[in-house]
Length: 238
Image 1 (cartoon, rainbow, N blue to C red):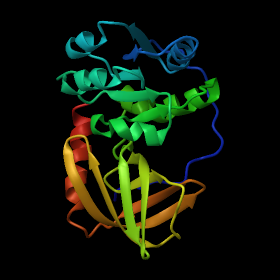
Image 2 (cartoon, rainbow, N blue to C red):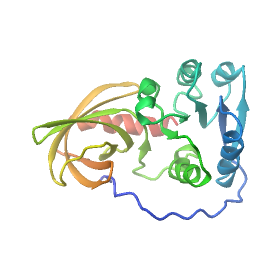
Image 3 (cartoon, one colour):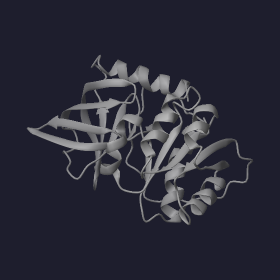
Image 4 (tube, helix red, strand yellow):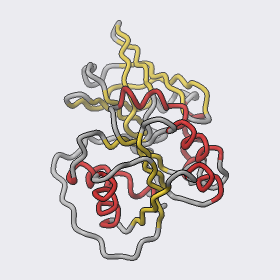
């Protein structure tokens, strides 16, 4: 049986980690004081940060990083392109800094995994890193949820809704949207991923919260197999 998405928990506590850093995160185009704040937050989870400057694209082509934190300003496209074209970093976790989910959609072809929105604060940064650290540190559960942001179209109940993905697995998807459907509504979900052309799959609404909904893919829809293979490949090559 494949896991889908439970409703996010509203209470989180953050115990500091003391273990030695086992993963490296490149930090590009992030100015102080945000850079210092992010350095401290990643360090709590045993993740080392490495500041890259003008040689960022070249180093991302040659060196292995488990993640990249990138300011979404001028030149962000070339940095993400260098990472995704690199054999070592094509599956690295990319965090965007600045803007919002809608603006991040401009870079969806590069597969931004998550966003640090401004103004950045310690609690929200820790919450995001905690939610994504397993992918950075290669500590995968059997049915891991992959954080990734891409445009999602939902059609059902006579309506068409556009949102952005939050996390996905081979069994389901969580979506950020200003609109929603009732729980149990049957929908058709359509989206594209980095290396996978647009996929359409039947699904139903499994949960709803303010500004976000969860969908469970129809296990009898054979089109879901393409997504399952993509998720497995993503985890195996990360």
